[in-house]
Length: 179
Ligand code: 5GP
Ligand code: MG
Image 1 (cartoon, rainbow, N blue to C red):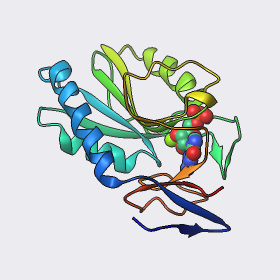
Image 2: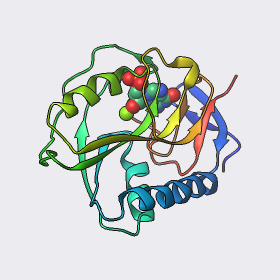
Image 3: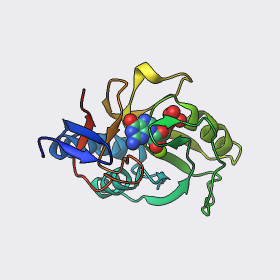
Image 4: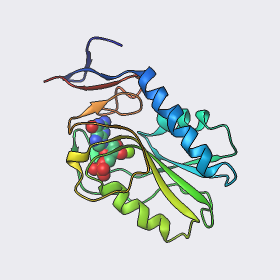
């Protein structure tokens, strides 16, 4: 892990190493196996941020499962715009499917509070949320997160799929804003 990284105008310092991320993912995959082994769940990755987490989580699951991606965003730069666009690109039939939403980070909870009711309208057999990161202190709307890799303070983070204005998604580790 680098001691610090510069992205646009900001400096970030290491927060979570890729080895710790993979350990948590493996632990969650074991729990998912117990719950979903014979249910052929559909992972529903939320783009762009969750692409890396979704790939690693699916790779850790050694049972029948499927994946698809949707796009839905409420963030520009470092502040939430509050304007959540609608679900784009849900091509898969989710009726009667066991859906596991795969999200990068639950911040205010706005995104999930819009998405989950929209998906429930499509009559899936079940819905659960798997999140790489949760910021409990930022949560304005309650979200029931069944699987969380890490709970973190209310600070801006990047890496492992998470960007700062487009950059830093490619880092293997997670970094937080230097104070
Ligand atoms: P919410 O709707 O829960 O407020 O926001 C969720 C979305 O905001 C996440 O999916 C993510 O895209 C973005 N977001 C929230 N916190 C952060 C953060 O610390 N860093 C980055 N890069 N994105 C964040
Ligand atoms: Mg996201």
